[in-house]
Length: 411
Ligand code: ASP
Image (cartoon, rainbow, N blue to C red; front, top):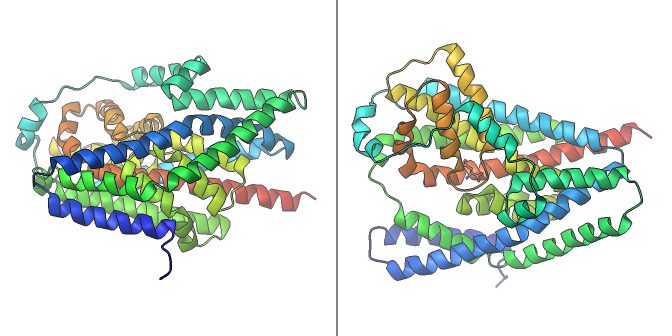
């Protein structure tokens, strides 16, 4: 019999875990849950362990090597344009779907009084959030590395990469250290991925077996609208953009991206998934390490289409629950705040729920309403994180294509 490849093992394990989780739901399975928690957490910990050195080395070498082709400005401009455009499309889809299907139309806030009462919101206004976001960008790099503060690590690595570029050939050894650091980190990721079938299965088993289903009935329509539109964005819009911009076929992309998408689905964390995303981009899709090294880590921190779509759809849903009709102006405010909120959300489970408070407050909606959404968030977070990660990989392919095209044009 042919030996099952890693992709096959991951799929088989994931499907078996979901089936087992459904079977074990509501049963007394404390020991199994303990084991699943242990294995799942171990897998995430291992990914996080290599993630920090990898991000740091990848960005520094990425920037330093891009300069050799004098393409740095094309890379960052294309990256930011791609991220902003796709996030905006996601927000518009989220708002449009909530308008069209009105998932909150027959529901009222009072129906959820119990859930809301238990909830205390952390007040975070847009200006406060913005200050906090800006303040978090620059800090002592050792502190940032120790705390795993990705945004600050990205910022410092960018500056260090630029400094290496500007000082031309003066520090070749330092650059070589980072290059070798990245190569070694990728080697470690290849080892960690051998555990992926177990880690992913454990996480999915725990998710399915412990899911609280009490609120599902009244929120089914909302969940269907959000999941349906997130899938639309991930399976139609983003692949279509990839095809239009690079000529690469969607199924080719999905085949190469499978491991990262499944890891994101199971971990609900784009940051923890980042090593796998880098691996898929560089090893499966042949994106140059200097391009993936810039686009993927940056994307994992600021490019979150799934989160943006969710927050926009959820804001309108809450407005419908509260019986408030948002004007066009207010919807534009939601659109803008959602883009900032998605950008500022760290790539960890349920981060979108925290920054959503700000979106609700921007148009005077009751922030406590997110208490209704919390019980279903872990489930919705799976698909939206996968789409967040997908956007980063497609971004790196688009940027690479643009660079290649420019190189052909300039002899
Ligand atoms: N879990 C998401 C991510 O890591 C963020 C969120 O929307 O909660 O990308």
